[in-house]
Length: 258
Image (tube, rainbow, N blue to C red; front, side, top):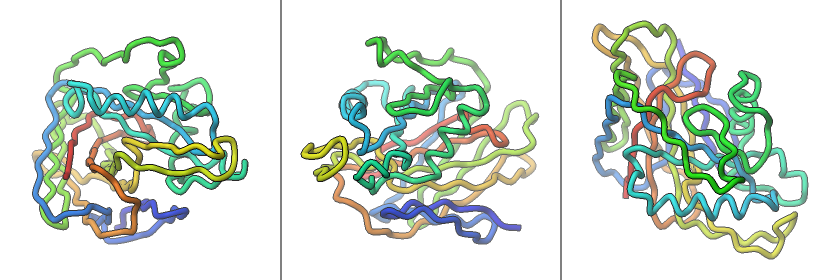
């Protein structure tokens, strides 16, 4: 059996088949970290954006402020997915991937969002338009027993365990995103020509793999490698679990990795 790994490199997103529990991702230091979710569900906040979209810089500026939010890595887990469908406007976004565009379209097809556009927000697996109206983030109801994630980063491996309290799920997928912060990009063409854009929470590498059920929990491993990447001030790892083909997160955890 084989698992699918989606690895985002500069201007490239490709599908690679590797042995079932093996996944590759890019992290910078061989340090050990352990992340554990709470038993209550947290909010994964997804921003769909593009360097080729003139409406996106204000949304990203607001998104960057979440680095100072006291709820970060406890109740809120922001992630900025750069889509590729504006690349034709004259500027190719080096962080964009068709995998992220497909993720946004899947939300729309499943009825979780009303359209596919940038900037686009998804909070807890549901479309959110509150940013356009100056509203505060809606945090999910603190539902008990949504499951627990234990993610251990040890040298070259990330082990993901998911404890399902109800044992009712049949197909689960583990996802991991390496996020970069403080990245400066001068845009030389397209709608944002002449602007110096700063990116935080931007996905530098994205991975997914099926979870395998043991007697007590679901399990998979994600093995990392080093890729070329832009200079970052900080990096973070976010790990989440979804069910079937629905991208909506069931549970999420993560935090700073340097």
